Length: 259
Length: 190
Length: 190
Image 1 (cartoon, chains in turn green, brown, yellow):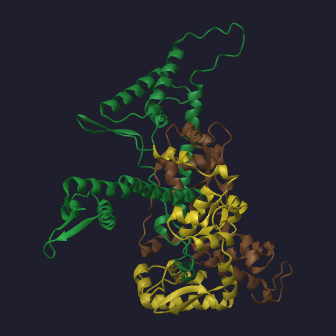
Image 2: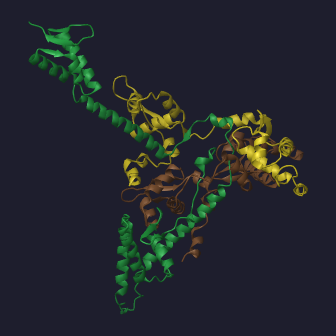
Image 3: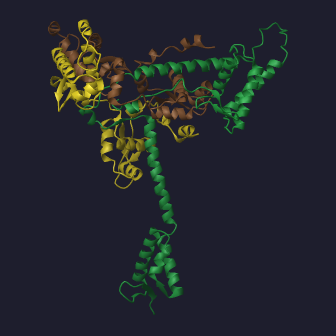
């Protein structure tokens, strides 16, 4: 708690609200913010239409809702799946509302209002928005409180307290490191030393002599270069070949010795 | 308070006077870099928990009564020393801090759902918020405001989440029971 | 000290009573990482240096007179709050027995490998981490987060390690199946 930068939280609760901003005559900007989902949009529409949440004028609200979605599409704003699901729900409720109420012939209790489930969700959602706001207030008060500065004993404890997710992330990091290594190893296997030696031998048989400078230049990677170098040493050791260098620091040629 | 010196502690294994006990507690709370639980103090000082608790109440009241710039209070399951809110402007001016480190509204709302519904799974949060909350959850985990609380015994065994001790500390709560009841928000709805 | 409230500060630009000034000074010294010079306090509080200096003397004397566990004193050109020397044993004892869920990054990594790969030998951990882990293993054994799980039936019969029951408790897991998996994290990426 000695570092206020990482410990304090800031919320701009009042500044983000779902709203349509008219920037200029021909441009509409939709400000929903990251936090706004279909429920927020619905609540916004209900408030703007001055409708009663317990008696939502579904037809009107659905039209408005669809209008917004269309506008989002027009503005090339990716409409998240949950907005479309809500649109479907609204349309369904709207059509159920249009059906004539069946007279409760069997005298059973009245059929449930098709809007009920949606209203419940909106109310529940609204409650948590208020809860979030109260958390924000608490955190704001708490931000007026500061804990002590670092004291010497804090430095003796360069430790972090870990959660199970830290554990997982630590493991992931190691595995990622490991994966890279494995890929490198696989790459290395692309040409083995044995293959390199075989290649060199057959080349030498055909061309009788090999310019080593040129040979090394052909190698694609440092690893291949090393392999080539070792192969040359191996061939020199095991075959009847001569290494010829005509002048100091000049090119070296590998020549098949006459046998 | 010289009288208290004469009053031996008869509860725990400690042989401290009341004043000595309070003084030692004050020192421990000061050096601790997180809220200090009563049981830790009891163990370190070899004193009875009740003796510690009542000394803490007294100590805390003394700080409050003294017009001190500091306070001692219970938060996140332990006791902590901090500055009093009325000095926030001066302290902020000195530390050159602004209220910072962002928690987006999405994260805050997700946190509210987790705080009140814990343990809760990602699909359950989605149901209430109506929006995907994955990135908020990641943020909250990174900030250590929430922790995993095991898996739920349903299809797919989804991970459940709850709030952490850091949550209590950052939001100034003694424990979860100090959260206002969610039903209290009902009357404002609609 | 209600009398002092009536006594306006006539020295600096400050409009604080003496009690308010002492309280603010106390808060600043408390949050400061380093001994706090009088001139810094004077600047931050917009008060006269002499007023600060005399408030400090008083404050320091009050701490001394109160049998507090803390002291305020001048050190290295500034003022600092610290525990009183008579509490050093208790403080040391406390710092020694700090909560054990704290791990260095190296230990955390080693613990992660053991948790996900158990039972696992030291050479295998070396292979995976790419670093020697001997001291981490010792730490983890000391903290009882891991236990030995018999010897592996290979060359040298190396000791195998796994996580302990304490590990589950400390990390809030019912059993090892509750360890987060890749799938839990894929939810966040979207």
